[in-house]
Length: 197
Image 1 (cartoon, rainbow, N blue to C red):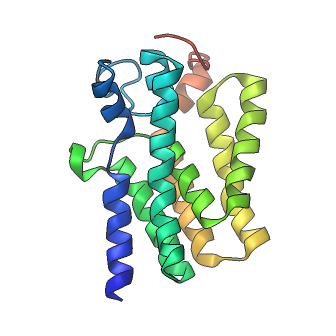
Image 2: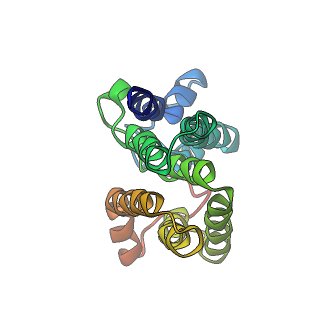
Image 3: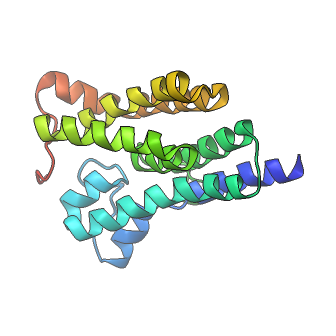
C-alpha cells in the first residue's frame, strides 16, 4: 500500500513540472501563461517561439505522463495503481503544485499516460489526431476528437475497467479545459496550427 501511494503521489509531482514554462524561460520567450492563448502548452509555445520550442515542450509534457506509469509497470503495480498513477500525473499538469495550481489543458501529458498504459492506445490517439489535423488544421479539435477514442479503446479492446474509468475522467477534464476553444470553434475564430497571435 505504501508503494502504491508513493507511485501515485510521485506521478502527481512529476506531472506538476511545466515543460512550457521552463522551456520559455530557458529560451528567453514570453511566459506562456500571460501571452497568446495564455495556456502553458505546446500549441501556444509554437505560436510564441516556433517549432523547436514547441517540440521541446511537447516532448517534456509527454514524458512526464509516460515515465510515472512506466515506473509503476516496472514495479509490478496493479491495473488500479497504474490507472491512478497516470491520472495523478495528468492532474499534476492541470493543477501543478509548483506553479500555483494553474496548468495547461493536458493533452500531451494525457498522451504520455496513454502510451504508458498501452502503446496501442497511444497510437490510436496519434493516428486520430493526425487525420483530423490534416483535414481541419485545428489542434484543439483534433485533440478533442482523439480524446474520445481512448476510453472506447480501453473498454472495447483492453477490457480494463480502471483504465477505462481513468481515461473517461481525463476526457471530461480535457473537454472542460478546452471550453474556450469549443466556443471559438463554434464562432469560427479558433486559431489554426501554425497561426500566429
